[in-house]
Length: 229
Ligand SMILES: [Mn+2]
Image (tube, rainbow, N blue to C red; front, side, top):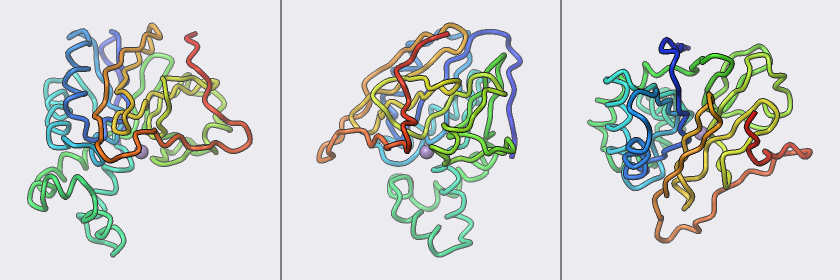
């Protein structure tokens, strides 16, 4: 899978799962310095109310050279559904909010762009990816506790999304930046160079329970509050 690398030497902001919160992404982009590089940590699509807007904003950052949109498991699932290789993938595609909001034709128009998304971004002493790495360093777009438990810091800090929580938080060398924008939480950006966090309110979801789905990590592997180092 493709990787992307820092060439700027400037500051970066790694942004958590947007999940269709287009308005929140617009506000957050407006809060971040124009000269800094924005890394979207994957799962820009699905769940939220304004998926086309979120995708257009993310792609605009990519085209400007201001941002990098990393592949999440939701983007991968969309591509697999469009490929039509399994009945389950097609069923998942048709029941996804991205498919419902964009329709078949627009989903297909996005596929060549989504297929190019890198799975990692490497900065100086840190990297970003959607969920984590296997023991042999291959990217896994949906791993949770096994990576949290076993990551030994060999790539410096690894900044990930995928698992929502109440705040940007650190566990060892892993920084979690998904703050549940689509679940009534916030959309957050974390600067690996300074440890600074900036957040905006996510989309309120009428009829939704409003609580982030915070996964219970096994055997005490629970992401702690962020302590910048
Ligand atoms: Mn995910």
